[in-house]
Length: 113
Length: 114
Image 1 (spheres, each protein chain N blue to C red):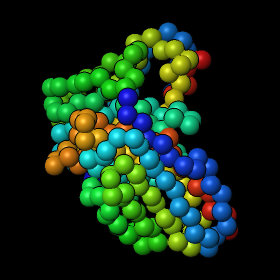
Image 2: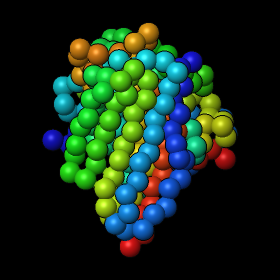
Image 3: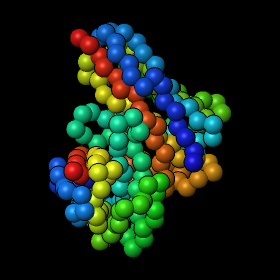
Image 4: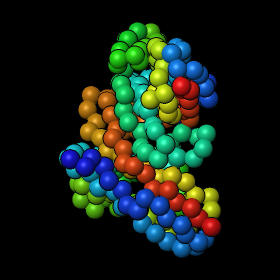
């Protein structure tokens, strides 16, 4: 079983602070995605990265894919209460099926006003 | 477009009862999935259907059965519910291409088995 580890598991910060969450695996990803899930709802796709070293930006969110395609990070600048939620990374592995996404256990982010 | 819809939203069962969770998507996706989400464990794949007429086991299939009724609909059945199946169940759909598998999720079914 290929595992995805996310850290930290919980993060509570004040509005306006910056933060980074991490997603790591010992296996190489074919592609990696970040989702955000709000209470009582299903996950919503934020971004997909596929190329080692790739950086994508979505407003105040910056996503980076490691050069070796084994890790990724999500950086939020000037966090706002609306960023509160569960952030999940999910990947397809080079050695596995593109039809099966493996999810990390998530980072629960709380942004306090 | 409604995206992915699931019914029911909430359900309470007694041990040994059966039920079917319904899922439908209107995005013309070929692939559909059933996950369960438990605290601290992310989402775990129960079953998936790569295309109409096919189904395959995921990571945690025991105690569940699925039916891909047509391209739009994918149901999950618990034949004899157990307390260990208390969870939040999500259905998702995607169009897998070039190694991408960007999934769209329904709102979930919160199931409690007493």
